[in-house]
Image (tube, rainbow, N blue to C red; front, side, top):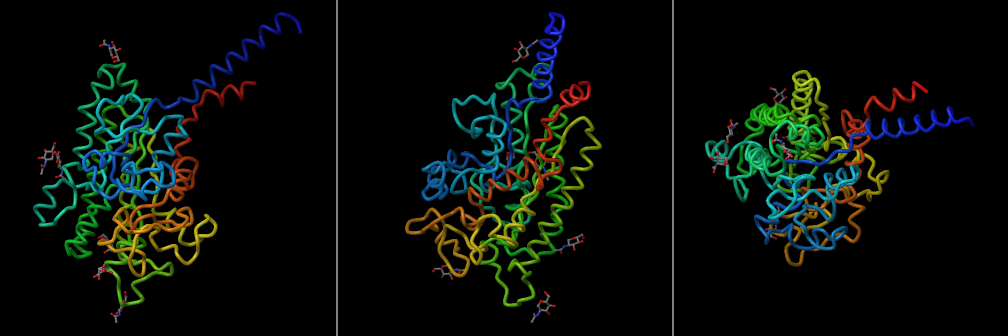
Length: 378
Ligand SMILES: *[C@@H]1O[C@H](CO)[C@@H](O)[C@H](O)[C@H]1NC(C)=O
Ligand SMILES: *[C@@H]1O[C@H](CO)[C@@H](O)[C@H](O)[C@H]1NC(C)=O
Ligand SMILES: *[C@@H]1O[C@H](CO)[C@@H](O)[C@H](O)[C@H]1NC(C)=O
Ligand SMILES: *[C@@H]1O[C@H](CO)[C@@H](O)[C@H](O)[C@H]1NC(C)=O
Ligand SMILES: *[C@@H]1O[C@H](CO)[C@@H](O)[C@H](O)[C@H]1NC(C)=O
Ligand SMILES: *[C@@H]1O[C@H](CO)[C@@H](O)[C@H](O)[C@H]1NC(C)=O
């Protein structure tokens, strides 16, 4: 090989190396908003004696409770690890470095403001004022300590992944337990979705370039609804054993939210916005439990809990003394009546990362045009 050719090869290799590291913009941080499906420790700080701070919460992965509403990791924990990041610290933790991310999610929080529930005489079971707009305020207050808000700072956040979690379930559950009708709840869905959309716009206007927006679960398949809103009319249940009317709420919410995301893409054409699902994967698990390693026959039951027939009762909830968990949580979809097991969350995270439960898959955010054009050049 002559010297010129060698030089050429070395140049090409260094160019390829440069191109590939440029075209895979490794995210510097994750900033997350949400409720119990996303909370990695804020509840634990606000209420150290709450159930998710007791075993068997955390038994599968962390060996001790962390405040996560599961036996192990949540979706955000998996996504962080796929991006090469550590666990994202809860935003209320003292003395933390939030330059690699912060998680503003709080267990139990609603989307709508507390004033909405007061006005409609609906008791909400939340600890503190931690609703969606409050979480956004926390982020905006924290921004200057993450980086000075000049153009360099804006650049920092363009390389961060922002996640708007599963907002809406606590709003609808609070209304149901307060005795509101399905028609009333249905009439609030456009407002809930509009509130999530406004939150997304508020972030995108601040320069956010990578945003994930999550839909809600089929609540009609969850032990909490199946136990407390059971029907004697068999035709209220679908072929999977779920209560249809509550799933219709979820479908309507998800349809409106998916439309809102499409509009956001038009409004912010340079941003990448992914709509991700909890609804479809849970239905897939229930349709073919064994395909995912779940035991058939117990797919609608909570792993941790006590009560007939769904292994659930609010007075003997997971985390209370004498309330057992199933032998092998990885064979259960549902963990405690409302939240999912480590295994369920992993399959969902994989589906958000590379499809099919995301539009587009989050891993697609990483693919730049640089490497592809280099390959074509060769
Ligand atoms: C909720 O409160 C925030 C201010 O805290 C306000 O900007 C927003 O409009 C309110 N949203 C609703 C739906 O009332
Ligand atoms: C919740 O917090 C927001 C902003 O921090 C505030 O505007 C609102 O009045 C609070 N609501 C209640 C009921 O405390
Ligand atoms: C902008 O913010 C960065 C990151 O905090 C800081 O290093 C830099 O000095 C700031 N520049 C100006 C002009 O304030
Ligand atoms: C909710 O309202 C929408 C729009 O009016 C309607 O299409 C849908 O059937 C309603 N869903 C339920 C469960 O009542
Ligand atoms: C059972 O529910 C179906 C539809 O959900 C309804 O048409 C039927 O009248 C109900 N039957 C009784 C006995 O309430
Ligand atoms: C929950 O358990 C209590 C105490 O055993 C019982 O009285 C109640 O009926 C149960 N509730 C449901 C919905 O099963």
